[in-house]
Length: 557
Length: 76
Image 1 (cartoon, rainbow over the protein chains, first blue to last red):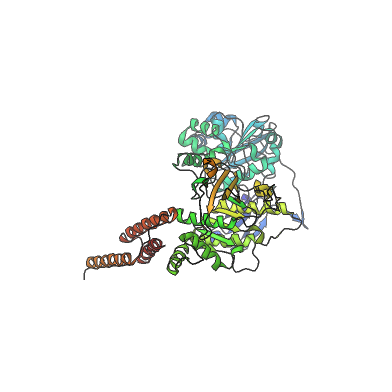
Image 2 (image 1 turned 120 degrees about the vertical axis):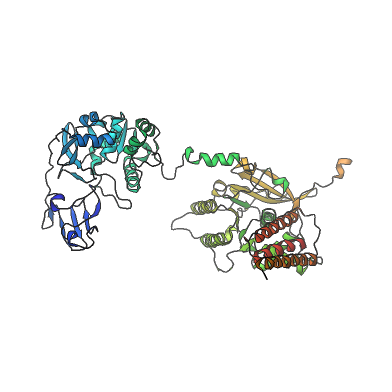
């Protein structure tokens, strides 16, 4: 028996549908309410109003009787004038109808499914979009015989779209027998069993153009088909505004536009992969932007080597007591004063915070914060009142702080105040939670990936201060300048960060300066090329300034 | 008192408040590049907020804060 024989009329041929109940709807006050849920794939139904339930398949003691596949008769192709006219309104010519063997019987238009030259199924529809298929017939693509040996195959959602393409001269078109799937539903293998009918053709095709309807079910169908066929060879089409399927395009814009759409079919995006086309406009914006350089650190000697851009991670290293944290603080104050950047700072080595704050005030005001000529209370209070808007200390309450808890707090700060920078100083004071069996190298790699993502998603710059391994001494018994590869833990410190800086104090009889060694800059076109800058350090106020070469008497004899 | 007079009166108060604060501030001259840059920016910001306040797009609290920030920076 069919659904129609039970009085159940459906508009789709698969999935779940709600319709009027033949048992109770005609007696109800709300007669038009679709109270009968029908699972078309399973052939069962249930009325939520009167409780009428049933199914098409006969089940005996839990065993389903498998019905033999039935081969339907070939439809009669004598079409009444009204049907020809109906197709004509949809720009499908009589020639196409004859060539495709379209039939008509008792107000049902019939689309025969040929496979190896034989009709294996007939799908019927009425003018008001009621559909049905032959019971127990074989499920296969519509027009499957026409794509044998084809390198390019076009798949449409319905027969009318397939006929529209045939009308435009495309023969390599097939159509899904059951239409689209409801978005959000898990498509069953049974629902896609017809894919097997074209397994060889789809596997051997070099390109499959998915021309589904431009609506949610069509997109769900397209996603699932592309997933199964292989996204690397799937292309999708873009319809003009106001058109939802290929027949719409044919009716509203004509055959040339249909051909154009198929010609312009573009590759199906692969998850996580961005094509040039996807980012062209963003890149052009960047090109046309008058100033796309990173921001100056505030020290002219570093402008050619290190500039600061959002969405990046910089690692700062250096032998202990060379001034890594001091330089980082000075850089932060410069960014606050020059660009109003807002910072979240985790600085375990500077706890308690009051000491750290005083050091920052010294740098901010340019006045000494200790000694006889230290800054006044008024200056300190004014400095703190201004700094309050720009600097937030994080991780001050916890006994042990992890990278996750720092990022959680930074996320909240970013939401409330809009952070531009996050400083983690230093790496070795964080509690590191290794996963089971995870090596230090893998852990560092994972955390840096996490920080990179955080920086990119939140468009802020992250600085991490990390100590190097124990460094050897040079000939003068002074520690050599460590590089990014000398950072304790993993080579990923150099490989997976955007910029790597070493702070090293060079002191001998002739000169005394802080060397800022930039050994890696990922985006050199905007942030400078690796090199070295020299800075002087004022121990009273903690500020760094451009280094002036010392007067050398030797030059003048 | 009409609504217009009331508005004028408030603006007069605002100007007086601004001038009083300005005269009571002992600005320090500085040659520090970064501090000067921040002073100029905070001054510009205050001008911007005052305009917004006049157009009803900023509150008195925001106006006060912008003025305080700028004048504090002048004193550092």
